[in-house]
Image (cartoon, rainbow, N blue to C red; front, side, top):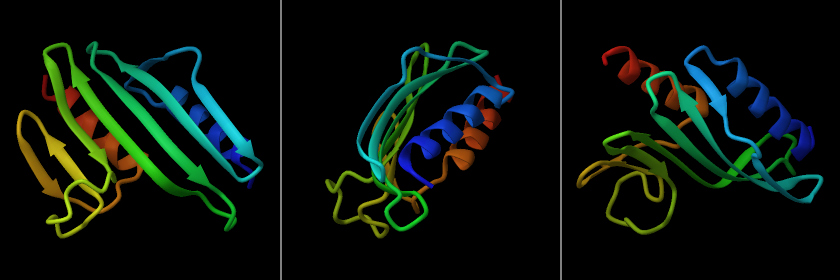
Length: 128
C-alpha cells in the first residue's frame, strides 16, 4: 500500500458512512513521497456537527502508522471532544495518547481508530 491508496480508502470510507452528509472539498493531502503524507479534512454530520481530521501517516512498514493525529468533534454549541497524541500531558498513563473532553477534562486513552471515533459520534448524534 502506498500513501495515495491509504488516503483514497479513507476518503471512500468517509463518503460511505451513513451519518456523514458531506466531506468538505478540498481535502488537503500533502504527500512527501510514496510512503508518507498528511491529511486534513472536515466531515459534516446530519445534525450540523462536524469532525476535523488531521493525520500524519507513514506506510513504510506496509501498513498505516499514524505518526501524529488529532480528531476534534464539534457541535454548533462548541467543542465536544478531541483525541490526539501531542506530547503535552506526560502525566497521563497512555502518554502521548489522550482525549480532551470539553470544557476541561483530559483522560487517558489508547490510540483510537477512525472507526471507533465515528461509532462514538454516531452514539452522540443518535441521542440528540
